Image (tube, rainbow, N blue to C red; front, side, top):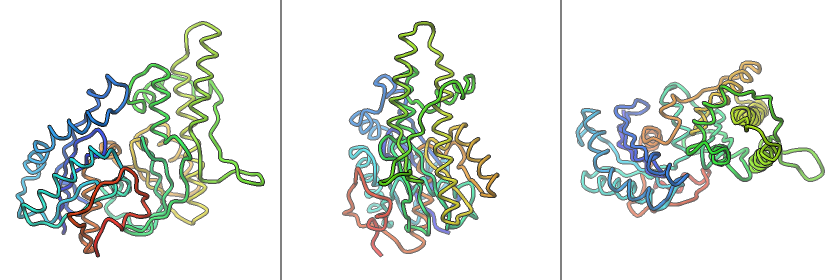
Length: 347
């Protein structure tokens, strides 16, 4: 059994967890959402300062909650890419320091690989190959998971990620930040068929559409024009119906591409990760479509859909058990393709 203390500070959650293989021994998440709500989105400098203030306390709490000591920890991990550079540096520096002080191996983990491993926390017997649908505030991708560190991107959004679209439409409807939870809640009281909105297909040269790639910027613009027209016509804006129609469009678009991709590549399991994996509309549509095509669809527990350190620790235990460790000179990357994840390790 391999035990890792992991740190996640890629955006606006300061998270520390201790994970033994695929078992969570402790998980601490300090969200900064109340702080960033007043700005309508994440302010990088504010996020970095908050991480600095909270990180030591979060580490101590994770150790206390697990009832473990440093002698029981086999390695120290931290998210190193992608994310906000200043925020990533806080977690990476803390992890490197702990690794040196306690003479433990250090591992830099790719944030998106963490989201893939979030499913393992609830499904410890899951093994590749399978298709991963990563849907978050910054990424929307279909990933062919072949093995630990071996990934192939089969499809992705060409512009706004799904979570980003939720935030922008929420701001447009004056619902606040973050957009995903508030739109999901409001959509429960609205009519998803009230307004026809574009799913954002990508045209191919010579005709037809890309089967797995998509676009959400056009959907966002369509909602903007709809709101402008409704406001021009007068009367009360049907916010719940707009939210429901918007959510329905995104859920259907993601479901169609994920199911088509899994079937085309002969993959029987779709594992969903990222903040949008908590969306009730996506869960409903994807589960129904998967059952229709005899596919298995897996979602992480809600607490592991958004950013957390347990998923980072889960990925790190797998890498460490295979002898993968990172250099203490490893830096952070605001962008790094998931396909390049093994560049983070010395083997």
